[in-house]
Every structure is written in C-alpha cells, then in structure tokens.
Image 1: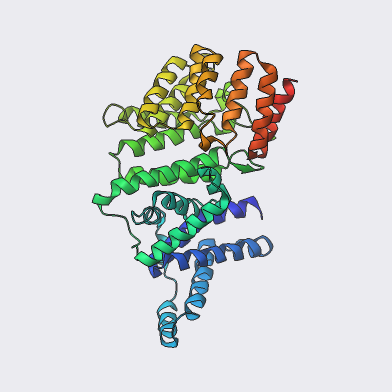
Image 2 (image 1 turned 30 degrees about the horizontal axis):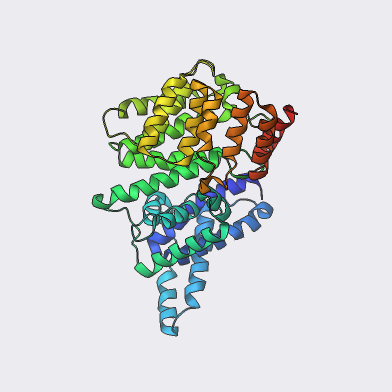
Length: 403
C-alpha cells in the first residue's frame, strides 16, 4: 500500500471510530467495523484511487459493516428493530466533529486496568499495531493481544459512555492519556521496527492531540510539559537521519537543520510552567530537552545541568530508562567509567531484556573509555536485539568501524 494512503488511513481511523461510537455506542462492534473499512480501503484505494471524501467513504463502509453485524445477531424482531434504527443516512454532523479526544478519554476509563487503557488507546487512537504496542510495553505480542481483547470486552460489558469525563474524574484519566500520547510520540520518533527510523505521522498526531489537551486544560503543568517535550524533541527530526535514512547521533547532527520555531514554542511553554506548578516528569524531561536544544554545539552542552535535572527526574519518576539516560550524563560529567558503573545496576532488570538500548549505550560508553573490543561486541549485541532496520545498520556500522 502506498505510504500516502497508509498515512491517510491512520489519520482518519480514530475520527471515524469516534463518530461511530458517539452515534451507535458498542465500542467493540464499532472498532471491528472500522477495521474492516480500513482493510477495504487498503485493498481498493490503490487501484481505484482515493475517494473525494475519504472520511465519508470510510464512515459509510464501516456503518454498513455494523448494520450487517447487528442484523445477524439476536432475535428476529431485535434484528429488524436494530436495522431500522441504523438505516439512517449519514449526517454532516457525523463528519464535522473530531471525536478523537473523547475517544481518548473513553479508552482511559477507570473501569479498565492501566495496562489495558494504554494498549487500547494506542490501537484505537494511535493506530499502532499489536506488535508495535507490545514492543512499547516490553511484553510478548500474544500478551498484548489478550490485553486489548479484554479491554474491548470490558467496555462492552460495563456500558462505558462515550463522552469527556466530568472534572472530578479527569485527573486520573489524564495521567493515562498523557502516558499514551507519550508512547505514541516515542514510537513515531524512534520507530521500533521496520525500514523507517522515524514516522512523522505518529509524532505529528501525538503533538496534535496533546495540543488539544493543552487547550482543554491550559493550567495543567504536566500537559504543558508534555507538549513542550514533544516540540523540543521533534524539532531535531530533520537532522536525525540522512537522505538515505541512516541514523545521525545527536552529537553529529547539523543543528542548523533543527526547527527553531518549535524550539522557541517549547521553551516558552516550559518557561511559563516551571516554578508555577508542582514539578512532574514531563516538565523535567522537557527541561532536559531544552538544554540540549539551546546548546550551540554538542561540545558546549551544559552536561552538569542535564545531570542535575536527571537526578531530579529519577526522584520524581524512577525507572530503568531514566537511569539509562542518567548514565550518559554521568559519563559526560564524571567520565565513561562512572557511567558504565551506573549502567551495571541495570543488568539484572528484566524490563531491559527486550530492548537494545542498554547494550547500545554500554557500547557507546565503552568506546569513549577506549575499550574498543568490548564496545564492538556490545554494538553487535545491540544490533541483534533491535527490530529497526536503520538502528541495525547504524549499530553494525559502529561495530565495523572498531574492527
């Protein structure tokens, strides 16, 4: 399928699903109908061309699939009544509203477990495949498929309403929504598998949805922090790979290619937020990204400040990925051997077994320390663990240079 069509379908899927759920309820049946409509589009559009109104096309096909499904279920009278109720023409208001934000909050309902909330939202709103979601959570694909299935059944059995939550419930569900958007952004910024190193469709959509959240909750510091983090990180997109798709490390990037408008917006958001609200992990990560983006060069980066920010972040939101990143800052401030010592504390952490990042960072620090043979072996181990083809090429090339 053409990348342009694939991107278009990914953008339209949550809008069509949201409109169907708002009109008809029954999230599980609507989600199945939308998936069938997307499959039909993927099969027909490359040969027949994209319709003049692709959203209306998807809505009509999904709606017909829904009618067919409900006609085939239950007693004859109920089937007939359901069909009569459903056989209504699609109204313009069904397509004029963007229900993506309401869909986000529905998928993050407190009746669902936190892992199910994250998984379902990534699939229904973010458009990620089950395999991509599994890698984001560092769990087997079969486990993730069961989690998504249980979440859809839970929505059906409990009759969760499709609407924005009341203010009293927003705080808890907002944390999950932000985490989901963070994961969607990360999957786009560093794609976990396939031939592309990054996917702008996911990063752009994550930024769009986070802007919507910020407009809804302008006083929330963590929403502002998340938006700032995305803008400051995405600002480097054009410099992160070559024309051939090869990865360019941060230290080697052309900073004149960085998006100055996004950097200015991200810094302004952060400036308005820090010190006025309680500090949260997204604000701290945004502050770290801002230090990188404002440095004139890699050599002029204020690594002591970055290390201090990581120490605060680890107190606010401890975890192996934070420790991994702090190890790099420790190495830049206190030397690579100090960073390697901190990395060693993660060797027994099972959460790091399904990611290549621990070995990749270890290889980099070993190379800085002058242990080229050990660095080469770590680069090769990291290359074997990643599903991203550009990451594989980059790591293998690093290893080859040390031969």
